[in-house]
Length: 545
Image (cartoon, rainbow, N blue to C red; front, side):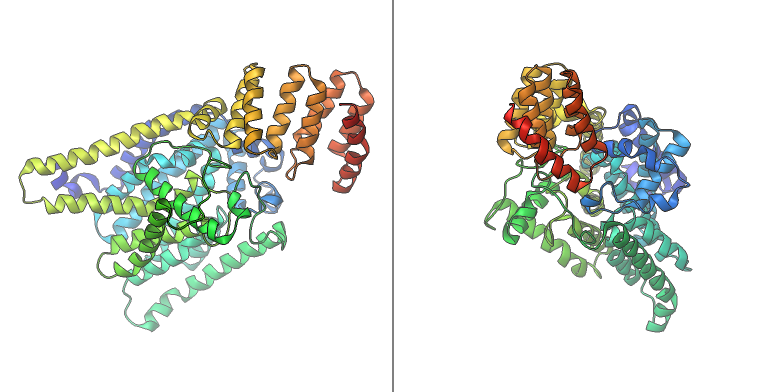
């Protein structure tokens, strides 16, 4: 086919590539501009007063992401939200617009990096195109808080582009590295990838290598020290490394190492499967949707182990034979390892957003395979290449349509929760969230049914307990409402909104004194005071149930 035969002449002018990517991303994700704040985007709204002024740099860089208990420190992402407020207002449109713009630049810089590194425009373009349309990316692009993933990869690519220049600017290397890990901690993976790219440059002589990179190395070390020093100051020594999570978010934090690793390997198989065959994409994999694997004989765990080991071995096997595959393995292995739950448990058992950075490797492998097929059939009858080209185009179009459909699920919480209830029926979060959909529709019996079903899965989910209290309040059963509000407040991870709901309940009963007492708990009590009030007042409340 002439189109395939003339890749270089037709496609590879950078401005043309940028234009192609811009149009495709607008077609696929333009609908997200009309979307709302959904799911964890609430953190942006809840902290609006703290992040609405970009000139409050000291305050922003002193904030955890979003609570100290989460064990996350991502000041660059929070600062990007502050810039959003300052220049585009507080509406969801501006936040979604920036996500799309950043995604365009990620795809373009990926193309630029690959063409400069591999000296192969075809694999650079096709890899970036596959990366662009992968449906597993919809959670990152369509969900505002996915910006952490986008920024981490964006700044990593800028660092890598700087590293391969003939004249490296050390201050840029340090800046890009700080911005990358300041967007998401797992961007530390860029360091071994950068080392691989330096190896590809084949700089003659140790002295030449040292002369070129000793200043960038010091700048990189300085960036790491600054980030982790700030992290220590903000989070404290207990949460400096590690996160505090509940069984709902990550049951692997409460299992033995063997079960954690075997389950994580099974999850890896799921990730790869959903990246290549994007069916049943889901926003929720929390307790108890995914099975815990205790035996390595599980097929998914064995496949995952093979993928994990091959991606590591492949770096060294292909390093001199095929740079593209070595780079693909490096992108996949080093960026997946920190979020894998293999070395240590993270904040979630699984999430499609976690495959955003590693999927660079998947895209490179996909492009390499298709271009190898084209090369193999180069001198064969023309119709064979036409079949291969049609298959490739069909896959890209199908991926694009799946991404469009999936992005629509992220438009509103109602759509998202409804889709999650279908793809994760065994998840306490999905069942609980579906209950809230029925609650806001005024279908209180259905809401009660879903919320009770969620409690059958796990009875310690505080938000679900609170929501069930709301349902009983609407149904006029104040005694049960009080019972579940108190359960929400005394759970291991209490839901603070239950304080306000208690106040509203007592106000609806005309009990001003008890409403005042719960307001005191809500606004004026430290943890010790709150516990004292809970012991003092909940006893009398429970006796009245």
